[in-house]
Image (tube, rainbow, N blue to C red; front, side, top):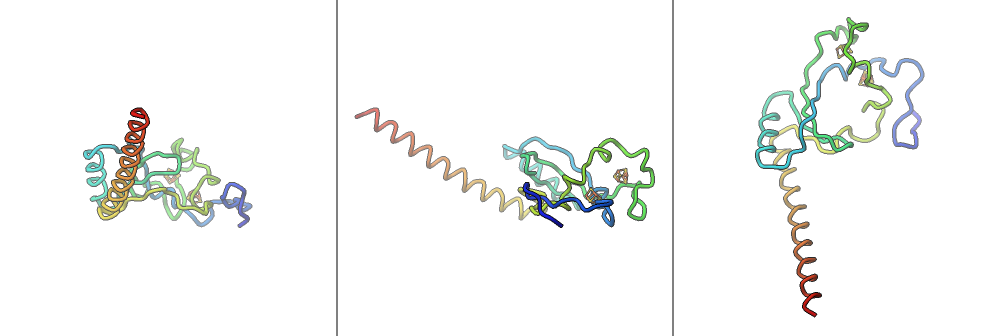
Length: 146
Ligand code: SF4
Ligand code: SF4
């Protein structure tokens, strides 16, 4: 498939969804950006459930995903296509992960271990930021004294 300038693959001619029904096999719901200990504990609770994950997309939105197949999906096809919900109509295969050469998620948390790793990395980044801010404040104080 030819690669486009924006890093996506060009859609093939014909039906770009041929042989695929992936987007009928999950739902995602936007959640507020987690900031507090309780927010992350809620994420832990989500992902302790089977077939549930949490991710941060490339637009900066945090989402909870439930891997569960739509009841209308039969033999790889929507058996009520004319009546499908708006969200299905609006989904553009050109934006679909099948035609992207990067991962669909910026951060993907599937397990408690993923979350622990993410929190440890986040804490390390925050510690570096705090140390830099402290250093800047100290040098600003020193400049004032001179
Ligand atoms: S939009 Fe993407 S995921 Fe959905 S059926 Fe088409 S190619 Fe597959
Ligand atoms: S309603 Fe149809 S198009 Fe929408 S998710 Fe279900 S099977 Fe797929």
